[in-house]
Length: 267
Image (cartoon, rainbow, N blue to C red; front, side):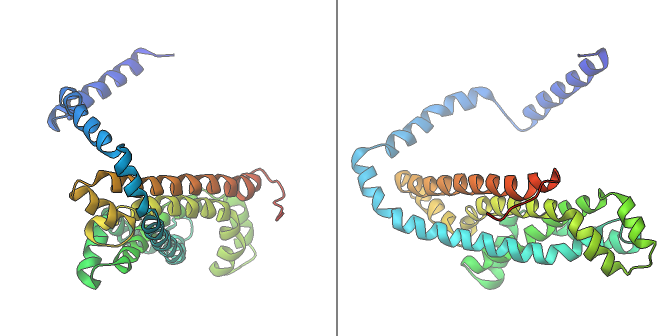
């Protein structure tokens, strides 16, 4: 039920949206006037002769997508492996402020730049190609997944931690026998999310020459070959849908069951 206070808050939000839209020149009329341009592109894509010709590029698109998946997988795994111990250092319930504060500051710096800017930096360092993209994904994954993980660690019930601490265990034993088991389902969910996200991100890193399927997409768009670009984007769409489906299945099997105290079978 909307109260007078809620109405005031909604009014303020609407007013801020209007002001912000004015400042960024967000004009609905310009959007409506631009729709015919989109229709022109669509009409160029769906030409029977062009579609038949563009289908020849499917093998190239599949190989480029495979390279993209490789980049995202390597970057996600390495980023999570490096990020996990950093998340332990950044958790407030495991360390003093002299440890977690500087760790969080470093992670915030890493997280400040999107993966495409990291990719641009690494292209300058190591040259064009997928290696620069992998390095960018690794850094972005470290900054992002570490934040998710240390926030999960801080939500762990303090009772088991206090019970284990009372018997005089080391911090390593506390992490091994309490922290990691308690946050394992969250970590798996975060890994799945990051891999899904990194596949999408890696698909556009080709804009700055960091390899993957995005390299082909941006070049075809530059030369107004929208039909060929559409084939490559369709491959990306299909791949993302498959990853989403697989992610749901894994979550249902290993995360949802564990959070409800159900036995997880391996069949």
